[in-house]
Amino acid sequence: MKELKEMNIETESESSIDDLPPTTVPEGIQIRLGGLKGETEEELKEYGNKLSACLRTIGTVIDMSGLDGITAVVDYEGALAEFSRDVKGPEGKNQLKPTNDGIARGVAMTVAFPKDGEVKSHMFFNYYFLKGIDYDLNSEVFQFSLSIIAHECAHVEATSKFDSVFPGVSLKRYPDACNALDRAKWGCAIYPCWEEYIACRRSSCFGKNPLDDQVDTLLQTLDGIDEKADCIIEEWERDDDKDYGKVFYGLFKLYGDLIKYSSYVLGTMHGSGLTVEDVSSLRDGLADSWFTSYFDNLGELCEALYESYGIWEDYGAFNPIGDLLEKIVARKGVSARPCGDDLYVTLIDPL
Image 1 (cartoon, helix red, strand yellow):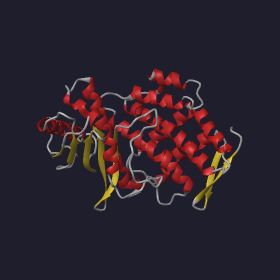
Image 2 (tube, helix red, strand yellow):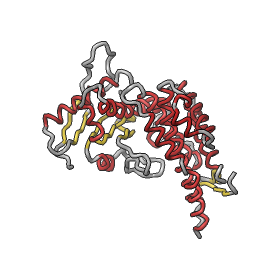
Image 3 (cartoon, one colour):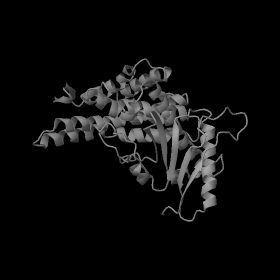
């Protein structure tokens, strides 16, 4: 189905719900909508007003003052690709792409970018997955869409909090003083883990609880992950060029995704006041797993960071998450140390 038309509407400052504090959503935020074939301009406008109302309500709990704009279109991937933020990510790439790793598929993204000397956030949504806000407030489909919206709203707050303490770091996703190993830790573990943990924790009170799906994604990622790591190493061994960086970054990305998906689960669990023992699928899935102690450790690290949310003394408080990933990769006999602006990678027999 193709987009029929696009429409821009603006958010309003006042809340339509009694007994709520003022919303933090800035007045006049542009919402760009790209509707489905057959939708009228009136239907699209009504949809936009409902989305604006959801944002204003969420903005009474989550700080949305850093929001610059919203895009909700059918061509979600295309909207990401065409967005220019004038900053390169941890891998030196500027083009944005949705998550699609065969297990998880992204339907929304919040992007930090510089504007007028400040760091602002723009939220992108796949239009299909927000259509639930057209339904009754108590319906499951509405609650599902609300949870997606709230999660991205929490990313807006997280970016603002992080930037207030560490100006500019959220644009590159690593501090200026980082060496090559530190950049790998920040890009593959520290920043994504913290971002998803805090977004899930802060949004856990809105909409349908996503914990079951998050646990399923985590356990699917964990299943056979060591075998995938072995394949990366075996491919390296067969390669005449012996690209040590390829095997190191391959394992860092592989296991980095594992702890990132763990952070989703931990954020929702902690926001909902749950433990592993309260979630039978997670408890059974981690039973007798090599990963259990790392999962528990990650939870402790994220909890400690949350206790000083927005008032961290320095970014060194986040480094233990990267160290955790380094320890996981070392299980496969791969380690690295800084060498100038590059890495010296060592492969030994796995632990």
